[in-house]
Image (cartoon, rainbow, N blue to C red; front, side, top):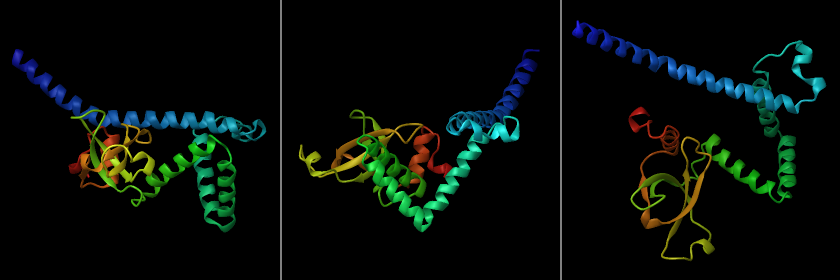
Length: 209
């Protein structure tokens, strides 16, 4: 009788785990997408004047309208910025924001970082490396971004390199650290693969590429 129960339990675990591996990622994905849609609805629709809100014309609230509006606006802006007058407007917007003391710093950082990620421009990321951080003996993956300004490279022995160390699972935040070039270990992997490795917390491996 005990063996029968053990066999049934083993079968139950086997198929339960198999089912969980299929359902849990789907449920989590749906939950995340739903959370994004609800946030987009509340945020984007709050920016629309009350007289122009979609529910007034549709006579009911439709979930996901906010994210649809976001996508539509993003596509429209993308099309406009490709045109001649759109480029002129973009330059004017950059000029206006550059006059704002704090806003210009945030704007430039976010714009440059998104340019790296979305356009996959490998010229600015010089490579991927292992660096000892936050203490000796522990390593993190970092992106080499070039050489630091002269005033940052005066201390100690050079040459020095700029390294951006992203955090997991959100690689848009992290640390800017200046390392001696001799202390970094270059890795023979692409920037895309490194980002996948960081976002997944190490679950994504070269074998999954």
